[in-house]
Length: 108
Length: 119
Image (cartoon, rainbow over all chains, first blue to last red; front, side, top):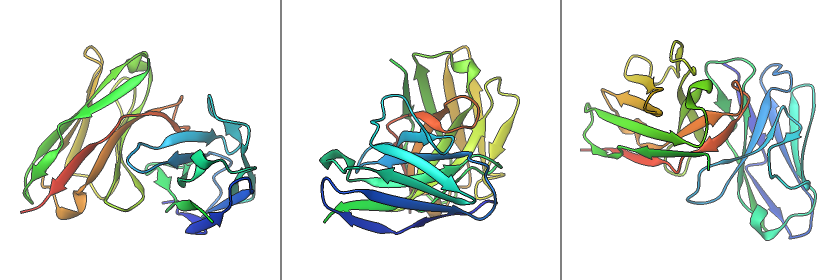
């Protein structure tokens, strides 16, 4: 099973600042990685797939990149609606599909 | 509008059974793998089970293998999850989620249904 490790657990950021979230895979997932945003009481929303392709309707301030087994979600200028929990998920080798533990982005 | 709508959640005793349903609309249901993903209270996301578009292939997490059975009816555009031998650790919000294409991210999610396993 591929283990996905996200860091940090919580990220405190001021509105307008840049946020950088990390996700490390326990083995190569060949950019078969998605990022999701989840707000309290809501279902997750797909942000990024293929490690760097924005899903339909996702603003350009969200971007994904990777190097080796380290994947990064960057939010270039945080808006009030971006404060949420973010999850990465690998779909390279499954079952099982595996998620990271999540990073909570909170207002500083 | 593309939509998934879960139902069937509730309170069940340990060792009991429950059947969840997910009604799909707004897309060609039979073309897509659909999964169940759960979230325990205050915890992260856990993939539970998936089924291919034609229903021929089913997949399970080790934590539910042998206890849960996923199925689909492509005529009625519905997905089901039969949950037997339920445990306290199965307590969670259960979401059905549609693959974007083939196991490349879930682009449509239901609103979730809550399962509580408790005596």
